[in-house]
Each structure stands twice: as C-alpha cells, then as structure tokens.
Image 1 (cartoon, rainbow, N blue to C red):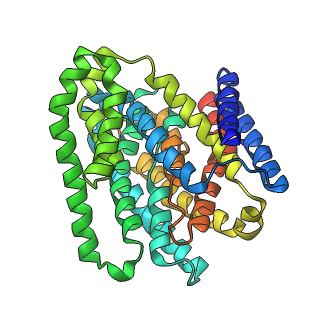
Image 2 (cartoon, rainbow, N blue to C red; image 1 turned 45 degrees about the vertical axis):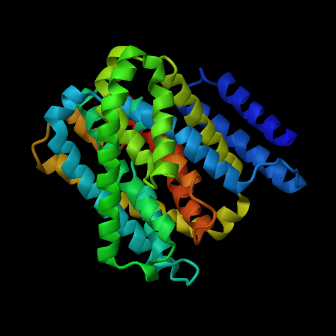
Length: 374
C-alpha cells in the first residue's frame, strides 16, 4: 500500500513539475520516465501495490469523466450550428471506415483462435473513437477546423462508448446476433440520451447557481448511470455536459482545464509505465498493421473531401484537416481502462498503443511543422 501511494505522489509531482514545458517535449519526457520506471519495477520485481484491475478502474471512473467534461465544454456551439453537416457526415464515414478496416484487418491478419472477432471489434471501436484535444492546441486560431475536429470527437465518442459497453459485457459474439446487438446498442444509446436530457433540467439551474458544482454533478451522473442504471456512464456524462454547456460557459470553472491537463499528462506517464519490451518484439507487426489501417481509413477520405468538395475551410485549414492526429487523452483513457478480462486484452492494447505512439512521436511533430509553415 505504501509503494502504491509513493508512486502516485511521485507521478503527480512529476506531471506538475513539467506542466510549463511544451506539449510535445512534455509528453516525451513523461513517456520516457514512465517507461524507465516501468522497466525498473519489472526487472527488480518491486511490489508497487498497483494492480491492472485497480488501474483500469481508476482511469475509467476518476480520470475519464474529467476529460469528457473538458472536451464537451470547449466546443463552440455557435459555429457547430452552422457547420454540423460537415461534422456529422465526414465523421460518420471516417468512424465507420476505421471500425471496418481495423476490425476486419486485424482479425484476418492475426488469424488466431486467441484473437476472436469480438476482440477485433473492440480494437476497431477504440481506434475509431477520435479525440483531437492535443491537436486542437496547435490550431486554436483556425476556428472552423477546430469545430470540425472537436465536433467529430464528440459525435463518434457517443457511439464508441455505447458500443464498447455492449461488446465488453457480452464477451462473445457466439451469444449475440447482429439484430440483437443493434437492438441493445440502440436501447442503451437512446436511454443514455434520455437520462442526460432529464438530468439537464436539474443540473443546468444548479450550475447557474454555483459553477463549482459542475464536476461533482458530472461525476454523479457518470457513476449513477454506470452503477445504478446499467448505462454507459461516459455517454450520459458527455451528453449531460453538452446539454448544460451554456451554463458552463457563463459560469466557468477554473478547475476543469488544469485538472484535465493533469489527467491527460498522467495518462501519458501511465502509457510509458505499461509498455513492455515483449510488446514490441512479439506484437510489433500488430502495431504496424493498426497504424496502417487507421491511416488508410482517415487520410484518403478527408484528403479527397478537402480537394473535391466545397467545404467551409480555408485552403490552409483544409490542408491540415487530414494530417492532424486524432487520438488524444480520451482515446488513451479508454484504451488503458479496457478490463483485463477481455479476450486478447494485451493484443488489443498493443494495437492501440502502436497508433498512439505513432501519432505522439511522428505524426504530431510532422503536423506541427505543417501548422508552423502554412
């Protein structure tokens, strides 16, 4: 227990110490430190008191809600009303294509009884869930592009969150037909939206009265939906914050942004801590396949859209639309919080880790150069 708290306090201290370092440099530092500590713990077999189950639950129930509140709070509703067709249509196409290519691609490439189709679908959903939080910091002045990316993230996250809950709880596609899956998915999605809409009548006046209640109410909605109603708490929390957003903007809350930044940086540190050498020696081809499939699903579609269709973006923004990485802290939180009971859990994480690391170490620096040079 003492080792557990020591590591937690050391992690928070490190993240706080480097908070003023630039985004890319900060993440490389945190990733490197996490990797070194993780290898030392593994080599010397230190007892930290941290279990995989405890870590996944901490990320899902403590860090993820904060990130969702921050993501939903940032988007401009005024611009979203104007640009929503350019959010919904491309986002839906990219989401569907990513899910299809990654799921079937990994399933056919791995072709092993230990990696069933349901595991491939979970990996596909995780990588189809976009979150441009880190990319948005590079394009803060390009408002239309910012709305397209942030709107895409919020739109597809709802579907990914509900789909993940169905697949994780079912555990095997042998027990679930397509029609039954569609029925359960639709019921959970509509129930989540209904509960969020009903809660908004209570939450909005409370936030107007005291903006400091934003985070406690978001956590209560998340936990209540998950534990009390059997609904995806993340979907309820995200929808509720979106419905309550006018009150959030007017009231403000100084804790949301720095807390979300702290949580996101902690996730990068945990990512480094959880990396293993065997993941690269035994699953490197899974990582490479996931990277290639994600790029195949996103880049050609958005590039063609930006070239052949009349869109609301400037030429400069359009050239960046398909280049920016879209797997941010929310995606990373979902990957790190996948229960260890899921079949082929380690292979799923390896595929997602490959994509996140590629974006962090390669795609994001390249995109940053494009932003600076455009």
